[in-house]
Length: 429
Image (cartoon, rainbow, N blue to C red; front, side):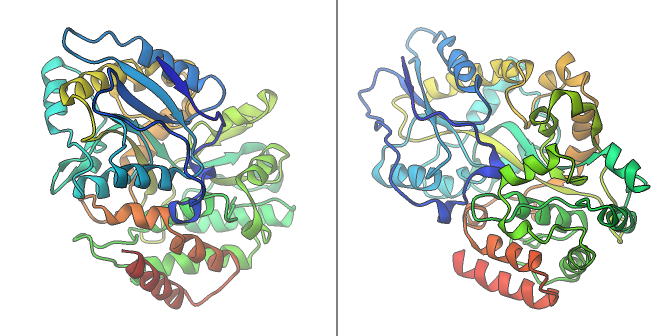
């Protein structure tokens, strides 16, 4: 039972934010209670071959007596926000779905999502709960576990070793040595911090969130209230403004797409920048050894950190049978190692059993991302220990994109920029 939608290869950095992604409703067959199979919607998380492999994992599911089989549908990222919100409003959500990192939280608050507490208990009993430390906590809310993680889109600092050597620059270890290396790279016409801030990509937004978290800041206080205008965020924006003034950030970054950034990595123009751990796979084979993930930078306060997006697999209340949904998700999570074995996802695995696979352990860049970057990563909730519905509006809206544009343009009043951001986010939330 297969129903595959438009196929495109697009990662998290390339799809539009939710509020900016409103358009024609994607054609997806509604889920009806009388369906004889679970509808499983899966976003397109990788290049050619991803859909076929994920569909194969779905088709390999052999339900126990009395349980329903699953029917795979591939869902494109364009219009993802409207696709899900329209389906939720009309009661036509699938039984199970993957999706954007913060989508489960408002849906759980609205009663559209089925919490995963019982499913996790079943995984515990079956010995299948081997999630890496901290990731499952990102799914916990006051209303229960919103969903289970299946992958982690984390942003790590990459460099091209040959370009730093050409510039006579040392590998940076902190913000000050990053500025020093960036100035030397600018002097030979290279970009020290890759940013793509056009309306069609989220790469610049992720990068600036990563630096804010790197300095112990972020958008929210520990209690979940908005807290944009604080000393740590001001220091981060001052640092980024220095990168703009010293031409470490490309002056064309405001109009750059993710494709522009990828091309400049390939042609040797970009020397450093935040990307996902599998970024080197997008580069020419003969150049891949030149790309290396460096250790997390220390901010001027001595902090480390980055932003990550724990990608969920969710269960909806529209399922024809909740027990069948839980059984299918257990099967799917127990077999997704194939996606990494075949090199079809750039995100990190969230299960220890996958992280220990030879294909992972033989890649020093991925190992460094797992061992050094994942432990210091945070969601955009940052200082808040709990996740909540408003994160989806913040992530999917335009306020942070407008904020990033102002930074790239060289606006230097950090406090005012953060105050404007807080006002904009307050209206969204």
